[in-house]
Length: 348
Ligand code: SF4
Image (cartoon, rainbow, N blue to C red; front, side, top):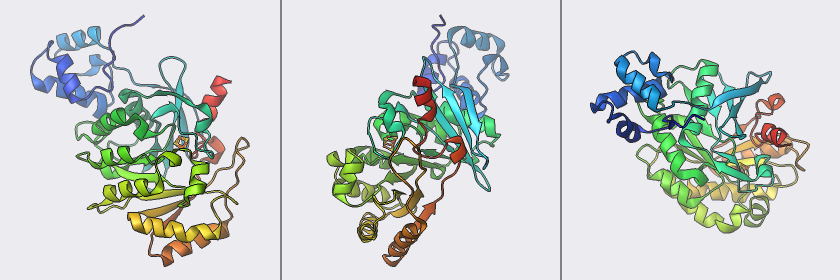
């Protein structure tokens, strides 16, 4: 068994601590940092700006391994779903969605999820474990390599498996690597953290030196209906959540987004549109209406187009910016809420 510690996912300080006994000059750890995260070159033998003896010592003492591609599928619209193998039998999925100018990478933060939203396939897995820092940023490195995306020229959304703010410390460390100019070099505005709505985590994100964008899966502004669809809502009420969203957005140019997956006969009734507009206005957010991807395992259907149009009109009349996100990648099961298919298959 290989018992060398794996340094992939280590931040600047940790790398400095590990490299210093071999070569105390601070720029050595910086060189390793750049090879790992900016250049995605994980073999010390290839780190040609380091002396050969140091490269050999690093290779003897440490591993530098990121999660591996273990399968995948490509949808007709070009969306790529990568199945990512983790140590042990666990797997998560990471998805690359092409747009006109750049890719969007949808990545996972946990294996399974503890929050049990009724409309989500991942919920069916239950919670297995948090991803490590290297397992989070490793998905980005993997998709960057698969799609040939240049450094810094893509978007990231934390909308895959799991609730990112339930794995806050590791997600925070991953964000530091992703936005570091000598790391993944991604401007924070290209990263969106999507949450079920954990107020403490939202405020934690707001306090970061370079906060990402925030999206909150609201689904409805009706408290009783939200309690039914998202059990977390019984613990963190809409008022408390709204306060956190407003504080996140205060003083920022980019407004937070409220995501509303539109479910036929559930949250698309016209009477639910005005409260949604009022809530969005109160918390200073825009609204993204999301087409639901039907799956045989879930008892929901997509809302009809005229209901979506109605919501958009009510939002506009209420002075709220509303958009619609059309589903992508359905034939590769890569759309939101479908990221449990492979894992469920693997378990079964
Ligand atoms: S929607 Fe998000 S928070 Fe809710 S169960 Fe699915 S993965 Fe978890």
